[in-house]
Length: 209
Image 1 (cartoon, one colour):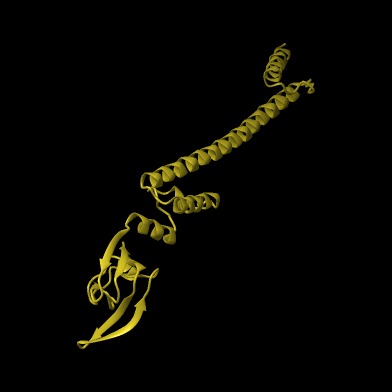
Image 2 (cartoon, helix red, strand yellow):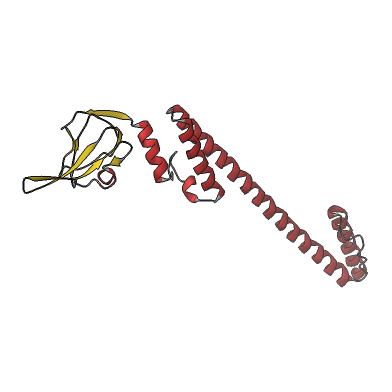
């Protein structure tokens, strides 16, 4: 009979699905409706399982990709610093900073540029290392002049300088800059006019950026 034939075809389909996916051997449908319901449930279960496995696999791949990107970035930064002959201690601090950024999932590290996202203080140390051109000044010679547009900052290696403000042709010493101190950072960052002059009070060695 046609109904018996349909039932046989459904039973054969049910058996094929069960043998393929390895589930349903404990299910014993008898009627036509039971076969249809069992087949539908098994197919839905397979789809859900495939989705879960696919999502987990995609997440694992994403984590592995992030680790590869991180290691590639850190290696690139390390090679860049080594090529510039940067002091090992400073290089270590820079690498530790980037490692911290990656650990906290800071997006700045993943942006373009080898050293983009580097903290200001570390960048300043690196700039001083890479731009350690020394200016030697004799007493009475000016390093910067009030009113000029600044484009450098300076670090005093040795010696002393006087900070002088001139108003109505009268000059007044308002401060002293000693070894280890820096000045001119506002001019470097903001490109503003110097608010005061700086003059060597002794023989002075200065690094400039």
